[in-house]
Image (cartoon, rainbow, N blue to C red; front, side):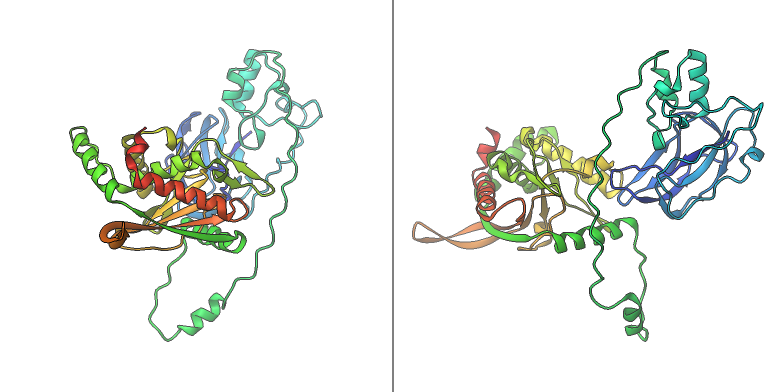
Length: 429
């Protein structure tokens, strides 16, 4: 029978996406592993691989369609010997696809063998190719754990299975998630009221793309639900600037040029190790403390921003951090980052110093426990040993989630960051 291809969930938080481009057309032969489409999530364009084999019988969702819900049928695959006529009334895409498995169809007498039943008597969902391989190898599909959409058994699941192999123990059903609180009524006047207000003015409406909608939703939620407090300190950068110039001269032959931001990343990573209680995130009903220093860094892109994560940053050299950050930033600007590269981390850095911003307060990106807002280094008069001297001073503001980090703990973290920035040679130890 024809096989539905469903809109995939390409990240843990993805609920809908845009079918940006079909890379195959109706009538094309498709093999497992072939890239058949490009899907735009809220922040990236990702390639979608087929998990079944067959002929693409019908495209249900045209390319360019936005807001396609996860698990919505987007196309239909035909098995050997089937034609487009066999699709019949293929289910039309629903506005909101439900995750429940489709009801089993009654099999007419003298038709092909009925779909195998599980131990509980329910239908086992498997692709036609997986059924054929299982029959050839004598594998009972009831013993195979499916890895496809909705637990569907696909080719890869049966290729490595052995005849009579026991089905993996079913994991204990997860507890029902606590229902999210109902969205609060939007603050301020409605869209209609705003449009009427500017009806006599020349304006241009800009439609929200997935990234801008996500930023608006997440940061509105962050300011409404996270109890922010702010800690401010300045760091003198004179020693760091001298040290950086010396290192860059030595690394010039290798094509490496360290930025001040590379030192800030390293300083934060080491500080999180020295103040481990601050290396934590809010996990709904508990605090989750991380062992490694996974530091996210805000990168501005057209229409929004990414926060790629430098994992295990405390273990990496300055030159390794610099190279990795450049790669992540370049791919962020072309929206080529995979979700695992910009999700996670416990701490973030937002640096607007290169734009001349002297200081600002950043919004915490949940579930992070804190974010460091970094301003520009400014030539500033400073009193040292009773004398006024000019120093290169950089202002920083640490935005902290009070549910995760208390005031004294946040102060210790910021003090450790300043210590490393003002004594940069120690970061090489």
